[in-house]
Length: 180
Figure 1 (spheres, rainbow, N blue to C red):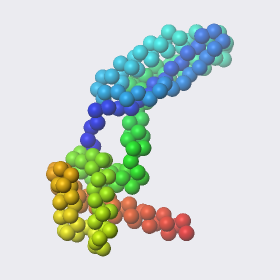
Figure 2: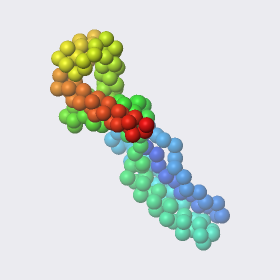
Figure 3: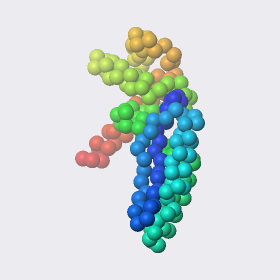
Figure 4: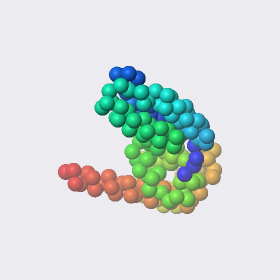
C-alpha cells in the first residue's frame, strides 16, 4: 500500500473536577505520519493526568480512574487511528472492494485513486465493447492511462485489477440473486 504523508487520529480525555466528570473523544486530527501523533497524545495525557483523578464522588472516582487510565493508554500509543475509515469514506464501495482484493504487490505500486481512474476507464471501454479483459482491453487501458500521464502501471497490475473487478461483479450478482 502506498504510504500517505498524513494519518487521522483522535484522542481521549478524562476530566473529573469536584462533582463534575466527563470522558470523551477529541476531534479528529490530520497529522504528519511519523512523530506528531505521539506528541499530541502526550499533551492530552498530561491534561488527563492533571484533571482526570480529582472527582469528589465515590462512584465517579473509580469510573474516573478507570477512564483516565484508558485515556492515557490510548493517547500514549498515538491515539485511535481512523485513517483507513477516512480513506474508505473518500471512495465508493466498488473501488474500496477492488483495492482490498488485489495482490499486495499491486497495492504497493498503485494508489486507490489510480484504481478509481482505472475503473472509470474500464466503464468507458465497456460502453463501446462487449468483451472485457482482452488484450484489446489492456491496450485501451494503457493508452488512456498514458493520456492521463500515468505510465508506471503495467499489464500485470491491470490484470490484477481485472481479477478484482470479476470478483466484485460475481459477488454483486450473488447479492442480487439472493436478495430476490
